Length: 261
Image (cartoon, rainbow, N blue to C red; front, side, top):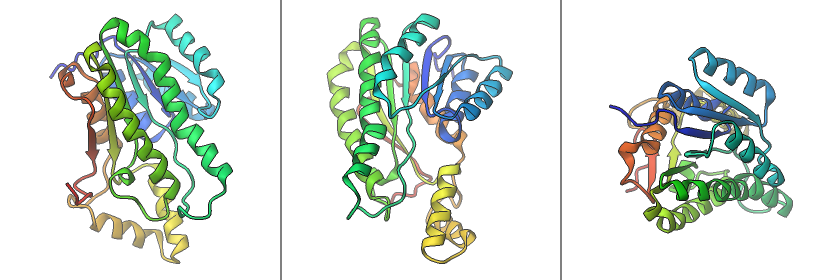
């Protein structure tokens, strides 16, 4: 199936590893011009080398999402190098595991700027070009916690859910301009983030990581953690010309983990 992604300019945030790296690789394989952004220079260099080995046309940008003042500069760099951004994949890191109660206001503010305001501001910067060109894709990666709040991830559950309301509202505002806006949420995908959360839970409950992982796996109908590539494939479809009638949705990639409809 031709996804019509050839020569599309795709900006993938958090592309230095995990889900972002897999997404960048998939777009590269589809012939897109790939912009990879990450706060970790070493991870960014490794991702760039991997994509270049595939023959990708890639532009790496060292990008701190907590600094909103650099957004215009970075997007202008992309536009000068590749032209306007056609596809934006909003993918941010997550906050530390915490209960919802009793967290310092400063921690809420820090993560709100990193996980929410940065996504909104970057999207606002690239949207005018998409609307003018009558084609664009905004895809925001969140968490299964927006559907079924995850214990001890109070900050993540709250902040990521705010992006769902924003995304749905935005989707209706730009639909007639040929721009689709969707949310995609992972279940238990095998990444460093999931390993970190398993380790944190094991330590908190005085259990082994293997026991925690086995318990999590047992709750997934397909009986295993997902692969980053499986998640990336769904992102690529949502970004494709084949998904032009899909907007305002929340797409799950969770192996059937979430039991609710």
